[in-house]
Amino acid sequence: MVRLTVRNDRSGPVRGFHPWVFSKALRSIPEGLRAGEPVELCDESGSFMASGYFNSYGQISVRLWGHEKDEPVGTGFFVRRMERAGDIRRRYVEQPGTNAYRLVNGESDLLPGLIVDRYGEYLVVQFHTRGMQRWKNEVIESLVRTFRPTGIWERSDVSVRNIEDLGAVRGLLHGSVPDAIEILENGLKFLVDVKEGQKTGFFLDQRDKRHAFTKYAKDRDVLNCFSYTGGFTVYAMAGGARHVVSVDSSRRALDVARENVILNGFDTSRCEFICDDAKRYLREPARRFEAIVLDPPAFIKDRRKRQQGLAGYRAINEMALKSLSPEGILATCSCSAHLSLSDFRFLLSEAGAKTGRPLIFLETYIHGIDHPQLVPFTEGEYLKCFILKG
Image 1 (tube, rainbow, N blue to C red):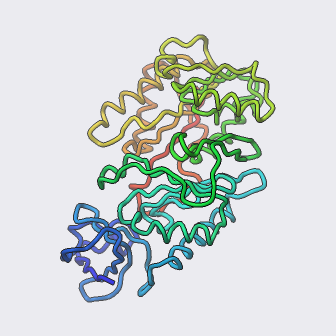
Image 2 (cartoon, one colour):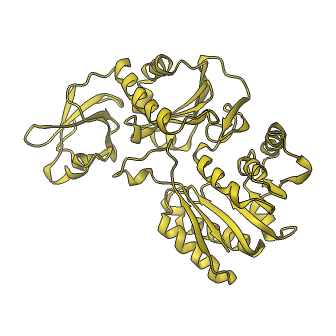
C-alpha cells in the first residue's frame, strides 16, 4: 500500500477525522497513482494516521475511509463498512412502518463517494467519484452479501460526477428491479420510481420533516409547493388537512402524487394537483392558505451563483408569507450546501420584515438519523428546514 506523508502543519484535520486530505497537506505525491488506489497516511515521524484511497492530483488528493493500520482492501473490507452502516439504521431507523431510508451516506459512513438508498427489498446505488467507482464490483458483492437485496439499481447520474469527467450511468447491477416500488414510511405508503425519479426516486432525507408537519395540517387548507410525488401532501392528509393543493412542474410527478393519495385511502376530492411552476403560482395564488410547504430544489448550485440563489430563496419565502393566513404555518426548506443555517435564518428574517410578518420558529431540522454526518465534515451539510408560525 502506498504511504503518503502529511505535513505537520497540515495534520490537524486528519487527526480530527476530517475525511478529505488536500494536496497541499501532503509532502509529495508519487507519479502514476490511479484513482481508487489504497493509501496510508503517516505524519512526518512516520507514525500511521489514517487510510483511504487516492482521489486525484487535484485539490482533494485523498478521501479517508479508515483509521486502522494495515487493513487490507477487498470485499471483506466493504462488508465490514456495510455492516457498520446497517447497524445504525437497524437500531435507530427501521421500524414496522418504515422500510425505506439511506443505508450508506458517503464519507460519514467511511465510504467516501458512495451513496446507497434502501427501498424495501431493493437498493439503489450512486458512485460519485472515480476512486469509489474503481471498487464497484467489491461494493456490489458486499451489498449482496450483507443485505441480500432482491435487486440493485445504479443511479450514478448526478452532476458531481462531472468534476471528475465521469458520465451518467444507470442500470441493473443485481437481480431485478420493478419500474415502481411500493415503500412504507411512518406507516404511510408511497410508490417510488427508482429508475427515472429525482435523486434515487424519493426524498428520503425529508422523512422526519414530513412526519413533524403532520400535526400542523389538521383542519387546515395546505399548499405544498415543489410537491414532487406528494410526500408532504400525503402526510398533510394523514394529519387531517381540510384541503391540500400540490404544485409541481412535472405532470408525471403529480400523477404519482395522486396515486399515493389513493394508495393511502384518502379522499382525492380534498386534493388539487396543479402542474405549474411553483414560483409563478406563488405570485398569484388562487387563495390564502393556513399552512404552506416550500421544498424547492437547490437554488445555489455552486458558490458563483450564491447571490442569484439567495434572491430566489428570498423571493419564494416572501411570496409564501403573502399567501399565508394570519397565524399560519410555513415549513420552508433549503437543500443548498452553499446556504448555511444561520444565513437561511437571516434570509427568513428579511422576508418577514419585508412582508410585515413577525416569524416564530417552532421547529428546526437538519439531516435525519439515516443521513449521519461526521462532526468535522461541515462540507457534508446541506439540508435545512424551519417550521415557523407567521
